[in-house]
Length: 346
Image (tube, rainbow, N blue to C red; front, side, top):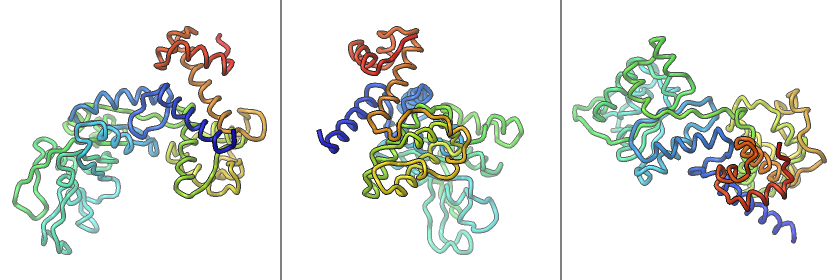
C-alpha cells in the first residue's frame, strides 16, 4: 500500500470513528462527553422555535452552535443572520452603527447621512434565524427595544411610521452570566426570562482535551484544502505541546495555531518549532505524551480512539457490552477494538 492509499485508509477510519462514536450535528467536531451532552441539547431544541441562549467563553464556538441549531431546524432553508452587539454604540459616533439601526434598519433621511433606505437584520432574517452575539453588551435602552420586538415581532425602521413584522427564531449568545448581570441590575429580568427558554453551555477546550487531536486533524485538513498543503502528521513534541497547553483562546486559538504551523512547515509534518511561542514557553508542555520523534496519523487516531473507548469502559464499570451500547457500536466491534488497541481493563 503506497502513502496516498494509506492516507485515504486513515481518513476513512477517521470518518468511521466519527460516525460510530458520536452523532455530532452539522459541522461540529468533538467526541468528548462534554460535547456529546451539547449535541443532545442542540438536537432537542432544533425542532422548535423557542428562543435559545448559548453561554461560552470567547472561541468556544457559539456562532457555530447557533448555525447548527438553525441547520437542523425547520427554518434550515431560510436566512441565518448574525448581529454582533459588542461594537455597537447607542448614541455616539455613526447613527447607522447603533443597535436599533442595525436591527430594524432605517428610512432615507432618518438622520444625516442616511441617503438610502437600509433593511435591518430583523427584516433580513424573516422566516429564518436571528443570532445576536455578545448580547450582554446591550445597553438598558437597547434591551428594552429588543424585548418589545420579541413580544410581538413587530418594529419600525428608524425614521419610518409603518409597522413591520418579521417572523424569526432568536438565538442569543453571551460570554458573561446574564443571570448574575440581572441580579446586579445590569440586564433586564423580563428579557432574561424571555431569552432563557433553552440554555446551552459550551465547555472550554481545556475541559475537553480528548477532542484536541481530532480538532487538530480537522484543521489540518482544512489548511491542506485551502492552501494546497500536504501535511499528514504531527511530531510527538508538537502533540505534547498541544495536549499540555491551557488554551485560553479555546477552539479559535487552536484553529489559528494549526493554520500558522501548517503554513510554516516545509514538509508533511508539523514540528514543535512550527507552533507559536506561547505553546513553546508553556512549562506544562514539557511533559511527554508519546515516545518517538514522529507520530503518524495512524498513531494519533489510535491514541484518540483508545482514550474514547477507555472512557466508555470506565463509565460502564468495565462492562464491554454496556460500553458498546454507550458508543452505539456492536459488542463484536467493541471486543475487536479493545483487543486491537490492547486496552487494559481495571
